[in-house]
Amino acid sequence: MTTRGTPPLVDAQARGQDGFPQSPLKLLAPAQADSAAAESAASEPEEWYPACAEVADITAPGFVNAQYRFVMNPTGDYTVHFADPDIFFQWNDILQVIIPRNSASASAAGGGEQAEGVTTCPICLSPPTAPRMTKCGHVFCFPCILHYLYTTDKAELKWARCPICLDSVHERQLKSVVWFDGPLDDDTDEHEQHAEASSSSVSLDHHVNFTPEPGSTMRMRLMQRPQITTLALPRSDTWPSDLLPPHQAPFHFLPDVYAYAKFMLATPTSLVEHLNRDTSELTAERRLMQSMGDIPSIVWIDAAQQRVDMQIAKATALDTEPLRNAVDKALQLQHEIQARVSNQRQRRKLEQEAPPKATDVPEAYLATRTSGLNTPTHTPTPPPAPGARNQKPRRNVNPPPPSTSTYYYYQAASGMPVFLHPLDIKILNAHFHGYASFPDAITMRVDAFEEGSVNDDLRKRCKYLAHMPEGADVVFVEADLTGVVGADGMRSFEGALKARRAKRENKGKKDDRARARAEEREREKLAQTSWRETGRVPAYLRAESPANFGVEEAVEVVSSTPPPAPVSGAWGSRSFASALHSAEVPGGRAAAEGRRPVEEDQDEWDLDIA
Image 1 (tube, one colour):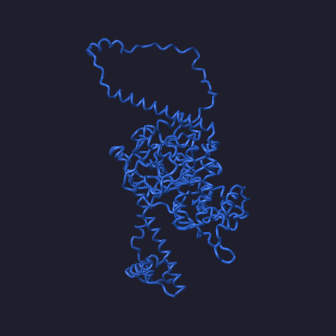
Image 2: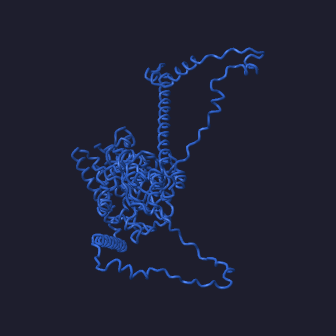
């Protein structure tokens, strides 16, 4: 564990005029830190540096809104976010930021390693202790970021530049971070999954990869999203129902909400539980620093602990009577729905296990007694009233009813943004004769995956993903559904599957060629730099460069081609006679006539729209 006495990123700023590092006790005492936290923050700086995500044409708030999920203040109103997923949440209403261990693309690739930029503090290069996120989307240890904020030249203004992206960072804007790994076991009972998902965080030592690599199996759940909302949850007995209205923010403890919902309401109990976990981490870190004799680090750990205690007091203050009534009502309704569903399943099971009722009446006798009942009777149709043909149909002046269409699609059971490919959805639709008839969960073998991000074009092609914010990373899994629909169900889509496979192979070849060209350009740059600096080119750059092989091949081809016969004429080779008597190019006209323009591959997404 790296000591936090003098973080490397602020070492130069923490030095005095004599060049020696100043003591953190001299820079800021704990009592001064508490008073500084209680005061209002200063105004924003005059200069505004580029945000951390502007490189990808997206702002820092847009990046945070696209990639992460949020636990919100239960007293806020979030109705507008059910209509537009691109509206940013008010930063003051966010209480916790839910961050996945791995991105969707890394998980789909089967990468078991953790993302270093997320699970490692950029200051101490260790797993974050009581992690906190800045508004620009970077995660630090709570003691580390406090040390950085109060050892800069703007410590008296209570803000500093982010050490990663140079965006402004305020202590009052730091948000608690919750790591998310998904349910611990996809095959467990639903009640156990919800209980596990309702926990605030998962330990650092536990890491589960739920998006397997190509060739392994994967479990997906059927998602259901009404067109009138951005809330999408797995289809179950509680969704859709009165327990989860489509335009009301759900509590985090409701079924499937913590794993799939973009945002959810917090409860004081869960907030205090998570903050107590931060206290445990700070206590363990303080014990370690004390054993190492690192007194300056202990000062900042104590300062972080004081702020955690203040946050616990604020979370406890949220426990009001209206909130308790709302939580109790949701829990009672959930128990009623679960009890009703359990009774229905038990009654259905008893009906299936009950033996058929025996009868002593012969079937022939019943047939003779009921033959007259089954005889169809003819009912005369009354004649139409005179002048009825000339009457025009009355116009309906009532407004049309609201749209009740619902989108169905499959998403990874881990809650990661990994979705089933549109062509596979078409195969399932042809087999089950309707999206509503899809099974609630499927397990299939993964053939490949395709990465992407949400934009206007993807929203038009895959309308069921219109609830995801712009810039969000998504992964489409190409699956082998033979185990779900059988060989007969796959036979009618053999052509489309072959085209998809060929397109994937061509794309892989293009990527390999592009990678080879990039490596070649990099070697050329290194060779030019070496030539300018040393006057020679290393042998490994000359030997590995494919340009040399290209020259040799070109020389061989030119030498093997016979030179054209000399043509005489008044104007030499430029005369018309020379053109007529010149040697015919092998395969010239025939090759030109036989050559056909290569048709561009038809857009696979146009074929696969579900």
